[in-house]
Image 1: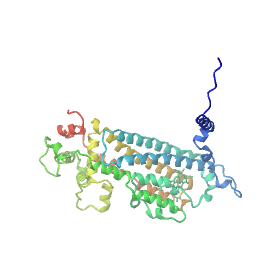
Image 2: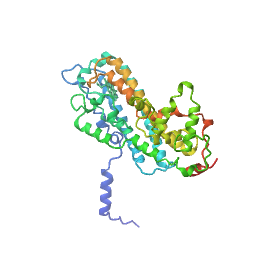
Image 3: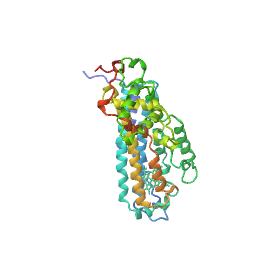
Image 4: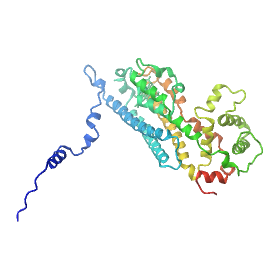
Length: 381
Ligand code: HEM
């Protein structure tokens, strides 16, 4: 017997229209390559100019940098969101993801450090063919680079020749970019959030230390662990290093040593608070305990990011010296003079990298009390 055809409903036709209209995903469309690959307009290719072959490379390398800057900002925003939480569980997925994503930032920065060398295939004479057409624009105006610096924790006050950053005339930022950078600078940066997170660490709560057996009777701080630590640290200093104990007292306990200038003090400790640095040092000292692993790796990642930013500044400076010698930059700064100043001054996490000054030998580490170990969530020794 012949089957009666099933009547087609309105819904059937609507569904058919929908599936017919929907284009299958296409590589170029998904990536919007029409926009990205149609965004290279060398100024020297325009009428009235002699096309400079290497300007294409110059544009593409900057664009590639900006794309990676975008990804770095995306990861830093995530890290900031997590650290903005009032309570973060040290063993949580969140903290682990921050660590993972900061390591991604490290990988990207390693790539960006390599990328500078592609410009070595452009000679200074090749660059001169189009350099004047770029004036007064420059990498100095990279809004995303400034946002990365600001999100990591570089504050306007600590920038080299900060008046350059306030320019909104030629060579400076547009009003919109300047506003966006200022807004980011006014929000809490990663350094401040990490500082607050470290300050909240419960390591030194007195309840956890009631069973602790002090090594020294000397009372130099208000905590028996630090009395011992200070004593052991001082005992390990060589004759030439004796003044380091004053640095220790200032960095961790805000005791201002007699005769130190404000510049000396600023060189000893930057934006982190003494309480945060005590917690960071503690994490570094006891990093072999599983419970400190993620926190330690996070701090280490921030130090590494700082180093890689500095390596990039260094490679860029060398490349600039080779390319334009001592000429001023197209962005109207003093050129390599400015870049060298920024290289020396724009470290953000030097407080953390400087903590190694205050380490002691592993075998001399005070033995942690059982209460603390139990409360931090790992098994008693
Ligand atoms: C021929 C190649 C390049 C030359 C000669 C050059 C030169 C300079 C100079 C002289 C400055 C100081 C500002 C000024 O007065 O212009 C500067 C800043 C800067 N450039 Fe380049 N640059 C080159 C390539 C690049 C590339 C490929 C990037 C990648 C994004 C870049 C990013 C930057 C950034 C971010 C700054 C600001 C650095 C800071 O403030 O610490 N530059 N550049």
